[in-house]
Length: 100
Picture: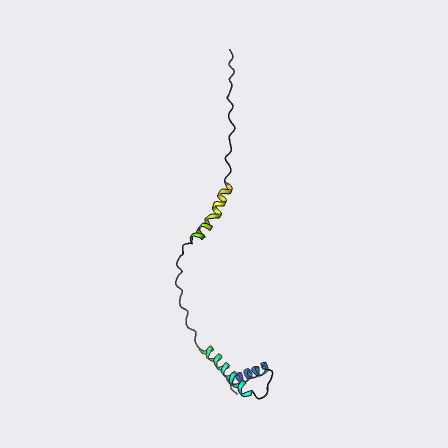
């Protein structure tokens, strides 16, 4: 028995078991198994086409919304660091004591 015939036989048995072991369908199971095994063999034998090299991705400028979102956290941080202006206490006029 050839290797391909053994694979077909095993696949036909698998199909037969999956259908609940019906009687009188051996020919249908065999033909279906044969088609499946041959298709798998062709797929394995078919050489894969070489991959095409990818073109380098063009740099995209961020969309306006993305740019605004990117700047927003920095703006919030800057605003958070900003402290309210402190009022300097008013200078009292100096009183010089003149002795005299």
